[in-house]
Amino acid sequence: RTQRVAVDEETSLQPCDLSDVARSITHGWKDVAGVLEPRPFYKNELIKFEDGDDRSEYGQALRMLQAWTEEHNDKATADCLNQAMTEAGFRSLPIRKKGKQSKAATERMPTVCESEHSMEFTSNEFDTEVSDLQLSSIAGAVRRRWRDIGLRLGFSLEELADFEKRRDGSMYDCLLDIFAAWKQRELRSTIGAILNVCREAGVEGAARAALQRNK
Image (cartoon, rainbow, N blue to C red; front, side):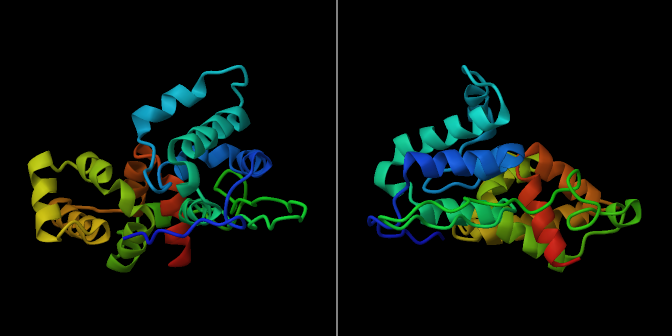
């Protein structure tokens, strides 16, 4: 479970921090929104950020970050944002120190569209059966969306409740059990299949980053 971080003047976020971050996560802001603490945004909540005077991806990302800080006030810290960004496949934000100028906020890890290497998978790899080690890594990265992923893998709400009860609410362990049961159900449980589900759940970037670490 996520450990809450005490808030002080060195971990609180400033408006210019949010602007810098929004500019750097434009192509993956929904992935970040899906893993933010203290409470992630769900997929159906993200629609409201797509409307506004600035409909660019930067504008959408900035509205999401502003809503997050307004909702959680002093709990919306740079530490929480760093953790979410790392899980979504970004390098973490240099925390602003009082009295110092802001550095470049973040740099996203390359995506399939942005690089020929890094997080790209060949067609053969895409059709390869996903290993237990890879699923464990994915579970650690996207555990906060375990219910959404479980539903998209074909499990009922009753089955998800059983997983949660059996694992005493541990999101990571629940998702591991879901992945294990899914592999037993499916004739072919491939990397491509799990990435498609993660994309539908809004956490494909985090899943790809996790797979890349075990590639």
